[in-house]
Amino acid sequence: MTANSSEGINARVLKNMAALLASQVYIVLTTLILATQLPRYLGETNYGLYSEIYAFVGLFDTIGHLGLRVILTREVARHKNQALHFLGQVFALRLPLALVAIAVVMAATFVRPTTAFERLLILICIIEGMVRGYSITINAVLRAFELMEYNLAITLVDRTLVTGAVLAAIYLQLDLTAVFLAFLVSALGQLLIATLLCWWRIGYPKWGVDMPLWKRFVRESWPVGLSTAMARTYDGAGLVLLGAAGGATGLLAGALRINRLTAMLGTAFTDAMFPTLARSSAQSDEQTKCIAQEGLSLLLGLVFPLAAFYATFSEQFIPWFLGPEFTATIPILVSLSPALVCNFLFVFLTSALVASGQQRLVTLAQAIGLGVNVACNLLLIPRYGALGPALALLISETTSLIIVLLLTNKPLGLVEILRAIVPAALGTTATVIAWKTLLTPLPTIIQVLLGGVIYCCVWTPIAMLDPSVQAFVQRLTTEATLILKRRFERRP
Image (cartoon, rainbow, N blue to C red):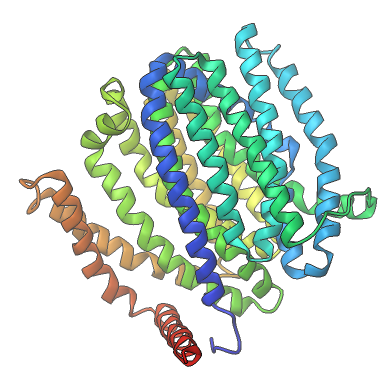
């Protein structure tokens, strides 16, 4: 891949990654505050109810958007001159979809045993989701224009509002309703700032009903929406089924919260690369393959040590993060650690498939994985309790990943994908061996820091043997040199 034959991971993509990384860091920091304070304040029972309601609503949330966000980003990235028309059409299309979603969720509350109080919380939750849906739609357009710094501004407002509101509810000793209302208030603030930034930077969306476009977008987006629904069901089904069986949903919710929090890093990375993947897929498969190889090497270099950390130090991490009441969550988080690697890989590879217009293959993999997930939950929950959904998630994530690896063999190259795994796997193996032997007598924080040094010393030279990583480093060095040269030239 030459400089003029492919965009690669260029300076703009790196800038976008930096903005999204900053956004995710702030999300992680604020979520750390909420994730450590909410379980302690609500207790295992109420925290389980809180998580179960969000999981229940998540089973139906996709009805309100049908995966339109991903298709909108792809189409605007390819046709920026029609961005406001596309945005207005998706805004208009989301309104009837949102109303249908609210009706379906509320109708479902009468099918399952639900108290009036729980029904109120569910209504607040689904309205919050619909409001956030419009913010996400605007974010999709901003990302298509590769304006990730505006996404960062929106995130800062949203997370500051929700953190402040929830902490205020905790300080004032308010009930669970106030916590749900805090999230709704932050969603309204997020929509307000997203709308203002969109008007200022891109323009006012052209509302209307372009029925042929609606049909095309729905036809293209429903496989993505179905895949999203199935992905949400991966986590949600376990919580809902565990709750129906009278299990300890709070214990499972704590581990899933940590798992999702970490998965945000992979999502940020993938979102930053999606516009580039979408453009390259319209040009040649070879370009897409080269960019995907570069991205995978970096992504896997991040996720492997994180999974190893959770598997090794859960006993020390859980009581500090969630509180001593959640000590029984430790084996659940350990079981979910390998699933984290599968999740990072799956999200990245399916994003590449969607960018190249092969979202139906993603739907196929998700459908098979979901079937495995539900079946395993039904089999494992009666025997293992709260650990059952974690094992079911691991089995189903692995199944889905294997299918996607087979599906991506032609457009991306299965051999290259597996080759990208080797440096991270070897570096993680060396780190875990050091943690379990030489570093064991040391304090945990010193073990983690030294383990990070060992990992970098092993991963870096092995990763540099990969031609795609060499090309990326060379291009990054060249672009950094040019940027510095321009800055010096501007000086008097």
